[in-house]
Image (cartoon, rainbow, N blue to C red; front, side, top):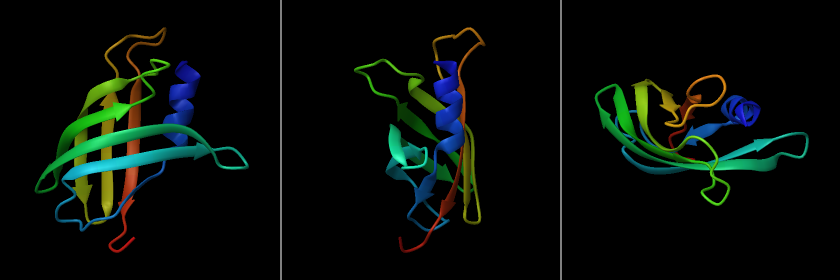
Length: 111
Protein backbone atom coordinates (compact mmCIF):
# COMPACT_ATOMS: atom_id res chain seq x y z
CA UNK A 1 0.00 0.00 0.00
CA UNK A 2 2.80 2.41 0.90
CA UNK A 3 4.42 1.81 -2.50
CA UNK A 4 1.15 2.70 -4.19
CA UNK A 5 1.00 5.97 -2.23
CA UNK A 6 4.55 6.86 -3.24
CA UNK A 7 3.84 5.95 -6.86
CA UNK A 8 0.69 8.07 -6.88
CA UNK A 9 2.55 10.98 -5.31
CA UNK A 10 5.34 10.76 -7.86
CA UNK A 11 3.11 10.33 -10.89
CA UNK A 12 0.31 12.70 -9.97
CA UNK A 13 0.12 15.65 -12.29
CA UNK A 14 -1.97 18.49 -11.06
CA UNK A 15 -2.82 21.01 -13.74
CA UNK A 16 -4.93 23.88 -12.56
CA UNK A 17 -6.86 26.13 -14.86
CA UNK A 18 -7.13 29.47 -13.10
CA UNK A 19 -5.30 32.70 -12.51
CA UNK A 20 -2.44 32.76 -10.01
CA UNK A 21 -4.37 35.28 -7.91
CA UNK A 22 -7.18 32.93 -6.83
CA UNK A 23 -7.53 29.19 -7.35
CA UNK A 24 -10.15 28.79 -4.62
CA UNK A 25 -12.83 26.22 -5.29
CA UNK A 26 -13.21 22.58 -6.28
CA UNK A 27 -10.61 20.83 -8.45
CA UNK A 28 -10.31 17.29 -9.79
CA UNK A 29 -7.15 15.26 -10.43
CA UNK A 30 -6.68 12.13 -12.47
CA UNK A 31 -3.33 10.41 -11.92
CA UNK A 32 -1.95 8.29 -14.75
CA UNK A 33 1.05 6.02 -14.97
CA UNK A 34 2.84 3.50 -17.11
CA UNK A 35 3.55 3.41 -20.81
CA UNK A 36 -0.12 3.52 -21.78
CA UNK A 37 -0.97 6.25 -19.25
CA UNK A 38 -3.49 4.10 -17.44
CA UNK A 39 -5.52 5.88 -14.78
CA UNK A 40 -4.19 4.82 -11.37
CA UNK A 41 -6.07 7.17 -9.08
CA UNK A 42 -8.39 10.11 -8.60
CA UNK A 43 -8.58 12.98 -6.16
CA UNK A 44 -10.67 16.07 -5.57
CA UNK A 45 -9.56 19.18 -3.74
CA UNK A 46 -11.38 22.07 -2.11
CA UNK A 47 -8.85 24.93 -2.24
CA UNK A 48 -8.97 28.12 -0.19
CA UNK A 49 -6.42 30.83 -0.91
CA UNK A 50 -5.37 33.87 1.07
CA UNK A 51 -2.64 35.71 -0.78
CA UNK A 52 0.08 33.12 -1.40
CA UNK A 53 -1.24 30.73 1.27
CA UNK A 54 -3.22 27.63 0.24
CA UNK A 55 -5.40 25.56 2.58
CA UNK A 56 -8.42 23.31 2.16
CA UNK A 57 -9.40 19.66 2.06
CA UNK A 58 -8.30 16.76 -0.14
CA UNK A 59 -10.37 13.68 -0.95
CA UNK A 60 -7.90 11.08 -2.23
CA UNK A 61 -8.46 7.43 -2.98
CA UNK A 62 -11.43 5.28 -3.69
CA UNK A 63 -13.69 4.71 -0.68
CA UNK A 64 -14.71 1.34 -2.16
CA UNK A 65 -11.16 0.11 -1.60
CA UNK A 66 -10.34 2.41 1.37
CA UNK A 67 -7.13 3.77 -0.16
CA UNK A 68 -5.04 6.33 1.75
CA UNK A 69 -5.18 9.02 2.71
CA UNK A 70 -8.93 9.46 2.23
CA UNK A 71 -10.25 12.86 3.34
CA UNK A 72 -7.52 14.97 4.91
CA UNK A 73 -6.55 18.63 5.33
CA UNK A 74 -4.15 20.34 2.96
CA UNK A 75 -1.00 21.58 4.72
CA UNK A 76 2.06 23.63 3.83
CA UNK A 77 0.21 24.97 0.80
CA UNK A 78 1.35 27.94 -1.23
CA UNK A 79 0.79 29.59 -4.57
CA UNK A 80 3.83 31.33 -6.09
CA UNK A 81 3.41 32.86 -9.54
CA UNK A 82 2.16 29.89 -11.61
CA UNK A 83 3.28 27.19 -9.13
CA UNK A 84 1.04 25.42 -6.62
CA UNK A 85 2.60 23.32 -3.83
CA UNK A 86 0.96 21.46 -0.94
CA UNK A 87 1.01 18.32 1.21
CA UNK A 88 -1.74 15.94 2.30
CA UNK A 89 -1.17 13.57 5.23
CA UNK A 90 -3.30 10.53 5.95
CA UNK A 91 -4.78 9.90 9.38
CA UNK A 92 -4.21 6.13 9.62
CA UNK A 93 -0.62 5.01 10.21
CA UNK A 94 1.10 2.54 7.91
CA UNK A 95 4.23 0.53 8.61
CA UNK A 96 6.29 3.67 7.83
CA UNK A 97 4.18 6.16 9.81
CA UNK A 98 1.50 8.43 8.40
CA UNK A 99 1.29 8.50 4.60
CA UNK A 100 2.19 11.91 3.14
CA UNK A 101 1.56 12.95 -0.45
CA UNK A 102 3.31 15.99 -1.94
CA UNK A 103 1.69 17.81 -4.85
CA UNK A 104 3.32 20.23 -7.29
CA UNK A 105 1.20 21.81 -9.98
CA UNK A 106 1.37 24.51 -12.62
CA UNK A 107 -1.40 26.99 -13.34
CA UNK A 108 -2.25 27.30 -17.03
CA UNK A 109 -4.37 30.40 -17.65
CA UNK A 110 -6.77 29.27 -20.37
CA UNK A 111 -6.64 25.44 -20.38
